[in-house]
Image 1 (tube, helix red, strand yellow):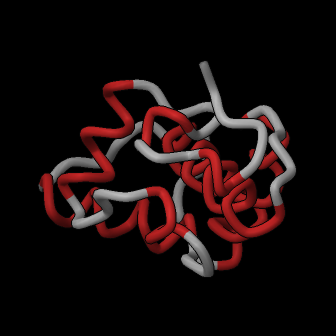
Image 2: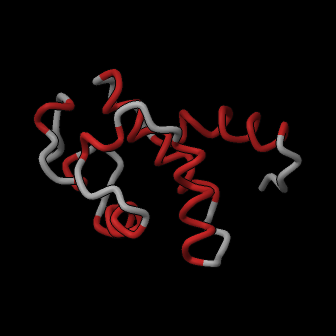
Length: 99
């Protein structure tokens, strides 16, 4: 069951939109507890994941990281795809390939 409030999230998998695979990705970049997401930049986390793994992950991973940080910062659980425009705008500014 997913957390309704940030304080209820004890494991990364408790955060809305975060399943076992993305929780594993977060652990791989040093995020082991939900509270560590507070105040983070979801796009920076995505860039770090790409760097650490040496692979470019699907951009929807960035959207999901943005959604997870948003939940931990505000308590508002939104579907990850609500963050796609924000990611595309940021990547456009950085001259990244957008798909």
